[in-house]
Length: 262
Image (cartoon, rainbow, N blue to C red; front, side, top):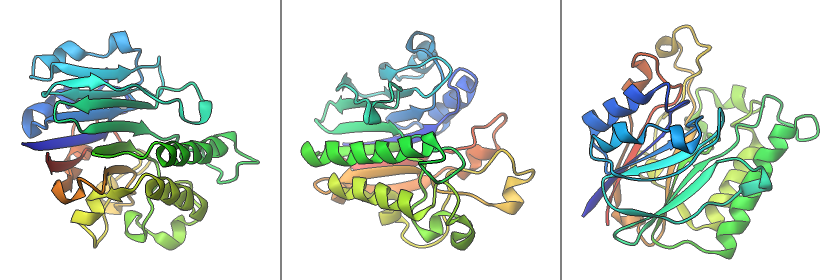
């Protein structure tokens, strides 16, 4: 049975409840993974999404910051969460689908503005998060699993508007890309989006600071869909819903989709 999954850093689920509802109505994914919900679990508007058919949910909330949630039309079971890097942040939650596949929803720290862990604690936390992610999935090798989320790294040259100008900017520095790739490889994960769209510029985030984000188009691909090798052959249809960046009161991120025949 095909499973279409979407991942979206919503930048406040309560503020953008209407945009989430619009996405569910217009795109009708089977599963939606949200990051940066910025809400305690009990205040996430689950009733709104349940009314649209998303009766199943697992969440980890946090007042004003972070927060991850998985909404599904198909039955899911809460499969726990990991406090990566020991930050005591709501940045990971896992769910098991009725078909047995596992979904990991991850929100990696942005890392601040200075790409130096000695000068910037947040950058060190980001690197430590990836190290813990690497070690966790190396020790407990995933199978029939999908990992999605705002991973806050644009790893490839075509994942940023200017590779040369971004090399010293947090999200595209060589040390971040190294940690990102080590974590991906340790779990045996494959980048589904780039498997489907291997060539060309591709972004999922545009800064709020740009007065005209469409014209400048200085984006980054920060949002990812990964799959383990045993189901990567079932993955297809990955796409980025760029139009959502132009919706009224948007997040600075847009949804990323993929379909799996599982």
